[in-house]
Length: 453
Image (cartoon, rainbow, N blue to C red; front, side, top):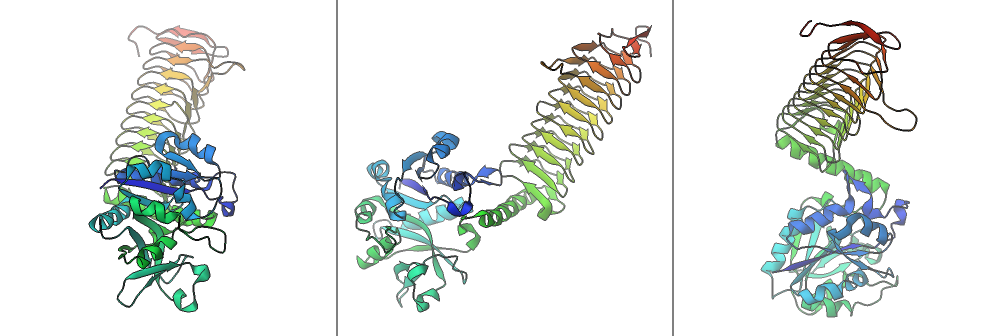
């Protein structure tokens, strides 16, 4: 049976106290609405219909064609919000699933289970609902049943009697409907005291028409925790982080202290890698097997090969091939590429540069806009002077060169294969292969014999 998905996301979100639309606030590295969109995709429902209001243009600009959009100009309640999607959804027929964009913790498996229950009752009931049992109402409506257990209605907490408030079965606000029944009944929802049309009234309508109303009862109440303010957002972040961490540990990754490990949703990690405490893995980071990352490291949008070690360092939009060691207190900036076996010690920084296989950059050095060959030694305090105040310039250091401590390389400049610079050299001109230069400005001390040591 085909399903259409409608995600309600038109609220003003005043409690977030933010210029950013609520559904775009990040949760584990993704806009929270992305989880709802991904869940719809997992159902095989195609592009969901996103009912937007506040910040609609910003939402469209970020999500682009991940959804079809319907604008709710007046905020007249959930029933009115769903009705806005009628022109897009009604011609498709079949079944319609509705849920909220600020419930990012809903698992795709839960929605699939609800859809399955609805499908099993096709032709016998026009709607299926998701419920949960909890002594903490979270402001949810109560599910009212008759003595035989049949669902009769949903009573919102604001109008529930004292007896109804003792009901522990809660309405989660997640439904499946039969399209042919849904649209005419939406038009019959009465206006409530707040001047809104509530989707929950459809439950009572169906019961009064004699339909049984099946429900899928959720076991984990955390899934339906909505996000209305920054406190809720932080609570959801903790829950999502725990889920992500448990998934990676079950996949063969060691987290020595999961409570102090922060892994965003789009990160990938290889088996037998160990992540130490106070480490943040962010964005589209990819980490290979058997690595050691942390403690106290930040890795964002980076690619890290196998058997790498990153200690107390920051890596941003950089690439590490296999067997690379960094830190402590290293910083790889955008465009840094360290080939296999590179060692970069404490307080080193690399930006938009390539370091060839086996190169060693011990400590206290900066390489920017550089191309460094294989098995080069970068002495302590080496700096590529790549910026002349207007433009960036490139430094090239060829294979097996030896750069002495405190060398300044004024770009553009090239240091030839197996050349050497003395400690404190200020290199302003190209250095020939095998040559040795010293001083400020650097001058040739002697020309090493070809093949000499």
